Length: 319
Image (cartoon, rainbow, N blue to C red; front, top):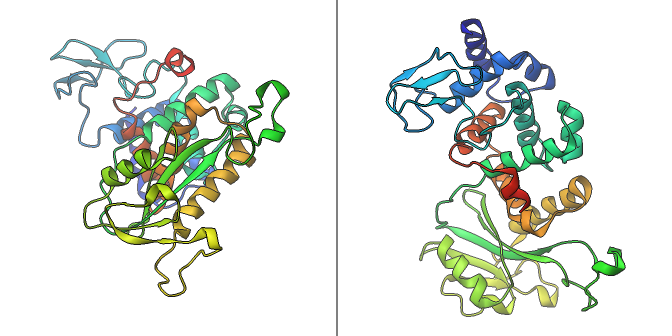
């Protein structure tokens, strides 16, 4: 265990910025080494109880799967306890590789690809993927600078659906799920939220909740944004305008680029996403976009820390 820990420290110093596949398997050659990495990532200042947060911990507990015992609350625990990995029997090495694959691929990783890459069943890979996406679910700070706001629709084309799945209610956005997105230009951070509709009563409050009163908000000319109580302007998409030639700052090209990445992943990686899981996928793409300037290992560490307190049971996932 001590040798594994020293190996993790040495590798961590070398691999802050990027990790190749060769580096990855040198970093996580076995479960023991990977487990120590999870310990260091979750508790950088020393192991604390996963149940009560006490630092009065016995690190040599005699338990087959729980190596730590809290002398304060009397409970056993491991790096997986009370996190998105809670109760998982999958080894630490496979979890580390799965986290790497999802954080490193801009268009995500399908459950089929993940199951082939780490040697688990497709069902297990699907569950692991959603547990990792759960770690991306964080509360963002309010945007206060120049903010682009737009909405998009996600879903398959009506003409491509089986006859018993077609709504027969028209074309365009019929049968698709609306999503609103905000991008702050200064930080290039994004917030996304799946919404029931694109009415003004739905979209405007989301803009207010996620921006400060002094934010400058740019939108398209959708009716829902009329009367928005924020400084800003709208680009007239209805007339074929994508950048205001008189005020070149008036555009929403940044958030539209984010939509394009997600939609390419939808078509090329996942092919189909259930509406009930759509927010979790957007959490992944939003979190990965917001952390794009971090080093490779830091992105992985953030997943480990973000997973704490976010248990996701399989029966809740499929209910």
